[in-house]
Image 1 (cartoon, rainbow, N blue to C red):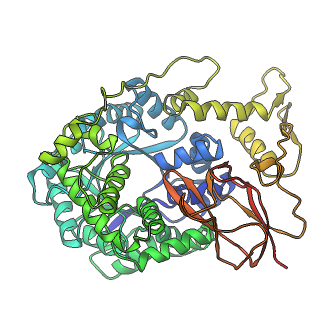
Image 2 (cartoon, rainbow, N blue to C red):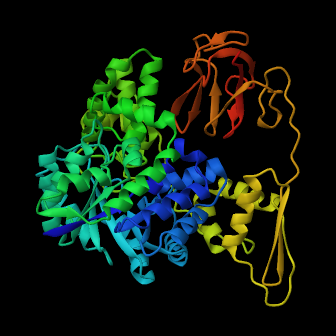
Image 3 (cartoon, rainbow, N blue to C red):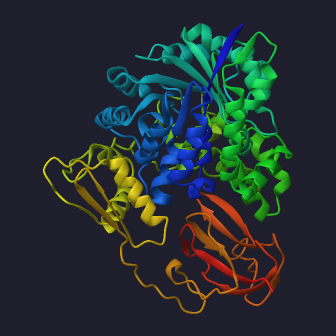
Length: 578
C-alpha cells in the first residue's frame, strides 16, 4: 500500500481577501502550530492574493507572515506560490528581482516555491526555476488547466514535457482551480502529465458543489503523488477537498493519505473559529447553487454583480460564455490576471446580449502576445475587436532599483508594490523604536515585530523590554484628529456610541449606500432594521460585499458618505438595539 502526500493550503486560504483581512499574526501562528503536527508534505503560506491583502489592507510585510509561519511550522517545509514573472504583483519584474526574491525566500526559511504562468509558458518560469536550483529551494511548476484545448490534445503533453524539464523541478502540479474537468478527464490528464513530464505529479483542484473531493480522488487513483487540501472549515470556504474527507475516502484502498488523523481533527477545531460567519455562509450557498466552472474567488463577485441587476438566473449562461471566450481567444486559462477579465467579458456579453462589441484590455493584451504565445488560434471576430483595442507595447520588466535605507526583502517588495511599500515603511517609522546602542547588543527582528503587534493590538501607549543589555521601546504614534460632521466619513471620529451596536467594515474598500447608482439607499437614519437586513455594500478588488445588520434596532448614525473609501474596522453604522 502506497501513501499519498498532501500539501496543506489552509494558511493561505485563511488569509484570502477580503475575509482574511482580519486575521493577524497571532491567529496565523495558532493555525500553523496546529497544522505542524499533521504530517503534511508542505504548508503553503503566501500566494499573490495573500501578499497583496497583507500589504495593501493590513500594511504588513508578507515576509513577516512567512517568518511567523516558519517559526511555528516545526519540521514541516513552508512554501510560497508565485505567478511566474509577476511574482506576487500584476506586472512583470526583471530577472534580478526574481533572483533576489528567491534568495529572500530561502533566507526566511522557505523550502519550496510553486510557480505558474497563465499560458503555461515554461520559458517564463525558467529564470525562477534556475534561481531555486541555485538557492537549494524545491521548485514545483504548475500546469494550469483551462477550458481549452481538449484533454487529449497534444499541446498538454508538450506543455507538461517543457515544465518537467525546467531546472530543479521536483514535481509538476496539475492545477484545475475552477473545476473545468470531470473526474474521468482529470484522471486522463494526470496520466498524460506523468508520462510526458517524467516527474511526480501533484494535484490542485477547486470546484463548486462539493466536487473537489471527487476530483482529488480521481487524480490520486490515476497516480498523483500528492494532493493539495485544507483543514475542513477552510476547505469548505475555499471549495477545496478537505484533508479529513480525503483521508476517510481513501481508507481501505490501495493508497492512503499520509497524515496524523488525530492531529488533523485538532487542527480543524483550532482553525474553525478563525473563519468569519459571512464567509462560511457564502461558501454554503455556493455548495447548493449551480456547479459552474469559475474560480471561487471570481464567482463571488460575479454573483454580486448579477444579483444587483436582477439577473441571478444567468450565472450558468455567464459561465458557459466564459468558457467560449477562453477558447475563442487562443486557449486562455482562468489564472491571474486573465481570469478576472474573462469573467468580466462574459458577464458583459450576457448582460448586453451581444458578443465582442468590445474587449477587456487584459484580454486584448493577451491576443497581442504580451503574455507569450497563445495556445491555439483566435476566432476571427475576436481578433478583429482585439486589433481595435489600444494596448501599446508589452510593459517593460520592473528593475530592482537602489535604496540603501531598505533591506533586500523590502527592495523586492517595492519592485512589485511601490506605493504599498511606502505606506509600510511609514508605518514602521510611526511606531518609533529606541534601542540602547551598547556594543555587541543584537535585537532579534522577530521580537521587534512581536512588540509592534502588541502595541497595535492593545490599548497600551508603549511597550518596553530589555534583552541582553539592550533596551527596546515601541511607542504608538500620536493619533491624528479627523472629526466628521453630520454623517461624513472618517474612521478616527466615530460618533458617541454608548449602548449602541457598532457595524464596522470587515475590509478595506469603497462604501456604497445603495445596490446600484439609480436605486434608493438600503437604509436611512431613523429607520428600523431587522437582524441580517442589508445595510450597504463594500466594494474591494472588484467584489461587492453585502454588509448586514448584526442586530435588530433603529439606525442612529450613518458614519460614511456614499462612495467614501473605508478602512478595516472603521465604523459604518450605529444601531440602537432598543
